[in-house]
Image 1 (cartoon, one colour):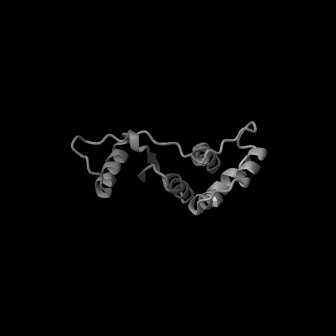
Image 2: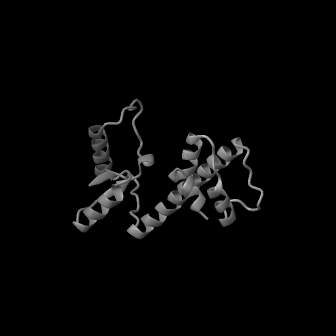
Image 3: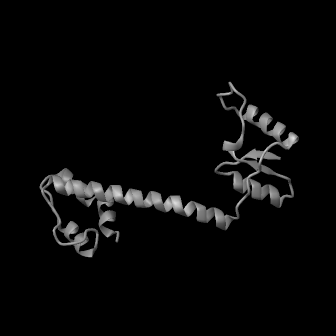
Length: 143
């Protein structure tokens, strides 16, 4: 059996392996598509994979263990979370700057800065709502 490796491909490969079925995963980037085939269809892809499998003309993808897959997922997930935190901190800083509130007590995003953030009050109801929103609160709690 041949399949195009994708987000669920490794689980499929492990299930097939456990059932004793020969399986070959192919990286989508390694599949040579005939010129003019711009539209991807499941039927056309299945036929193409079957031909490649029959002719033995492809390079199979190594299926990582669940632990290896988890480790590979960790890095981009952590980078995404760090980027989200950075953008949230930037938005909070700009909200405060527009109000003329500037932290001058040393390093930002540490306990003293978090306490200062929690003490800020705004006259405008919408701005106060933004400052007490969960996103604002979560940025203040991070260390």
